[in-house]
Image (tube, rainbow, N blue to C red; front, side):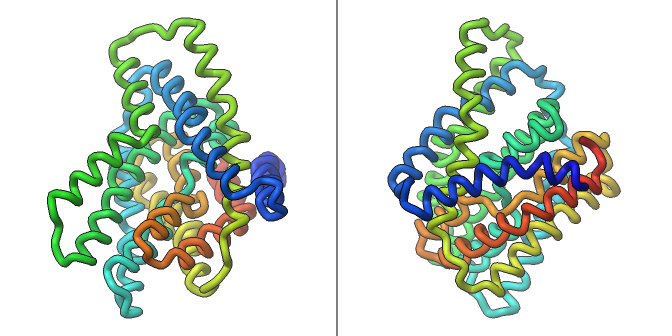
Amino acid sequence: MADIFLRTLPFFAIIGLGFWAGRTRFFTAEATAYLTKFVFFFALSAMLFRFAATLPFAEIFNARLIFGYLIGTAAVYGIATCIAWIRGLDVPTSAVEAQCAAIGNVGFLGLPMLALLFTEAAIGPVMLVLTVDLVVFSSLIVILINGGRDGRLTPATFKLIGMGLLKNPMIVSISAGLVWSSLQIPVPDPLNSFLDILGGAATPGALFAIGASLASKSAERIQIAGWLSFCKLVLHPLFVAIALIWLIPIETFPASVAIAASALPVAGNVYMLAAHYGIAPQRASAAILLSTLVSIVTIPLIIAALGTP
């Protein structure tokens, strides 16, 4: 446990450095936004494309992992939604809470951390987890918010979802890389070096950007944030473990990676969606901040329990 904690500590130290830079205004909100954009559109996309293009498609695609992770995540999503309804919340607000409870920071935190902790062999399972989150649950929250507001779904809603997926650089880079891999085209050395250098900026850039963005988050509605953090950091990995170990059992290594990915704190894009639609942004903000702080302890505990690295 102590060894794993020390191995994860540098990641959170960089997040802490970013938090200090944002809190002291050494990094302004505008600077943080541009750093995030660089990581999102360039560095992280280069990393994803390189790994997807250089790994055999058969080593990446794992249908049982996809369905197991989907079942475990849907279970937590459903629990958070039911609790929200019992508390009398409307559909859009319930959707935001469910998203906080089930969607982790797989792109910015999970990819770099798990690739180093579990070796680069973890990239394939992590990409599958990220794809499920982006395609299934990021679409679901848009459907629930728009349907809950208007009482019906319009073609414009599905057009919005489709365009969002097509414009998402993570989806585009993973898809392009998988196509490249399936065609069995060798990646030329100059291109591979370019992607390696650019993708190398993803880890420090993403972690620093997480910390700088957390500096603007508030800790209001702490009781709700505590419940949502419990769902994300405890219930989510628990249900994914049940699904991948007992319901749809898969090999130990990809199962461990997916469980570790499900133990990540609330994703930052949940706040962006909540703020965009004007639905419970403070709630999402507090859940992101609290879950990230608590995950400094819970992630090493869960990875130690898995016993893989």
